[in-house]
Length: 94
Image (cartoon, rainbow, N blue to C red; front, side):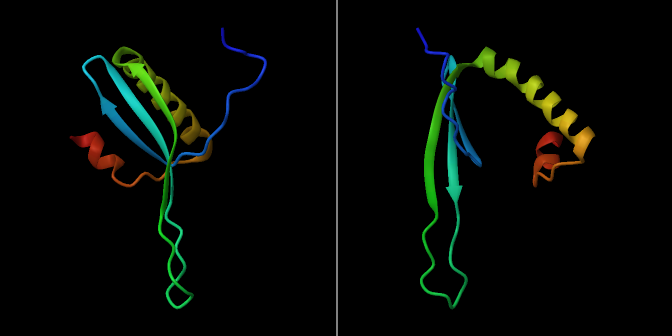
């Protein structure tokens, strides 16, 4: 049984990788840090890419999650304004 007395660990992720299988989806959350020193201030550092969590869900669960996420974004944007998402408009027209 899972211990519910402690909150689950929290991670920062700003990139996600989706991999479908015939029955499930594997969602890998990634922390991508492209930090590099500006030119003339030493050697630029290499980007850090680190998987922080991986979740496997049934395709039905993923499909049920989509409208919940759309509603969450719509509610947020109604209260605080549009969230910029480069390429989002193009994706929604395909």
